[in-house]
Image (cartoon, rainbow, N blue to C red; front, side, top):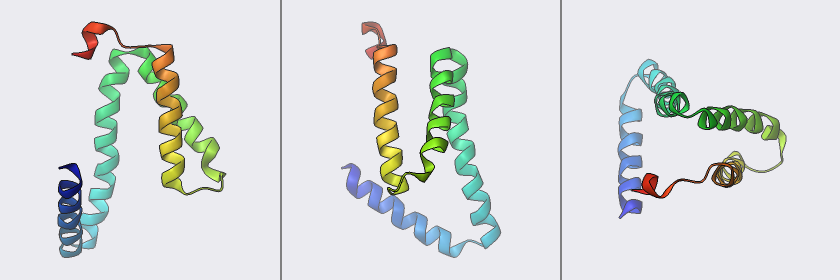
Length: 98
């Protein structure tokens, strides 16, 4: 179910992006960073470990920027590695899994 919805949303985004003025499209690309910050800032304020992991993620991403693999692959690898380390450092309690 996710794949058709993803493809449909992507198609809508392409159509909308091609029909909007360039200034608005540029503004929306900045809004993507704002959405990302809106997701991570509240969690980082609640949990110090999350905040540290966010900073570590930024640093590792910067350090690994010159590794000769695609940026998408690099992002996926860093996400897996950092999330594994986070799960080892701070596993979720049973009541948090609900």
